Image (cartoon, rainbow, N blue to C red; front, side, top):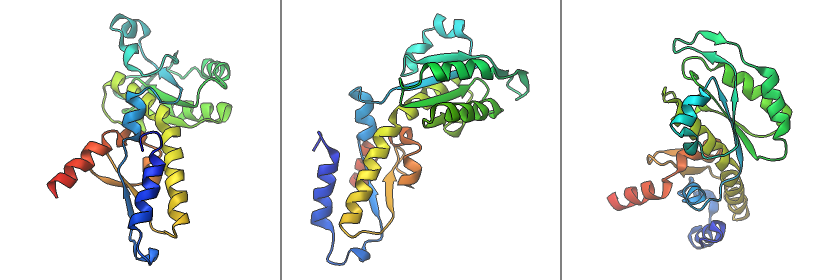
Length: 222
């Protein structure tokens, strides 16, 4: 049921649930939801805040085309690769941008150039954005410890733009499970084949990209 994945899941639950729902230990979900949202352009709008990034370098190599959003903003503040602060975070500029985008995006992502070495700027920016916008905030260091600043920014941006899609889906499945009398944990398959709780997956939807192919491989192996 490509037009509404929830319908297919409801039908599967109806056919599979035994007479005693309490005998079900857990539900394991695999979904192409995140993959489809990216491929079909159905992601939600997200703002990406780049702390300490070199705007000229980004423009020279067209790195902005990788960010997954045209709502990206440069904010002064920088740590070197030893984690030592060189430029303090420009909180005033950050706050001004946050007020300007109010009502225009569904989530925000924050990436600082040396975030894996010192995440304090991302954390402080996250606090400010959450207070001013009330939106979900994604911090890049929660998703990646790699020094590739462009890839980390892109990962954070994609994750932010998928939050609503996955959260709505998870809540719908949880509601259906409750209607069928299921009180068991609901798990989800990541893109690497690992199983995680849906509460974890709803915060890191970027990690369930390729969930479908991963589960197909597991099933084929079995």
